[in-house]
Length: 61
Image: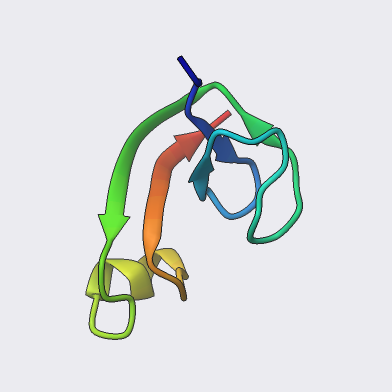
């Protein structure tokens, strides 16, 4: 079973060691997540500075 990881820079969630969006390191230590389905009309995405659809951690250590 793969472990979900979150990017330390952009909070994007992936199973990879490096983020496919920004190339930074990911961490196994994260809390909560939000799924963005339509970033262009999402107030949450706008507040979090997210400009792509996907799964994002709320807090990454």
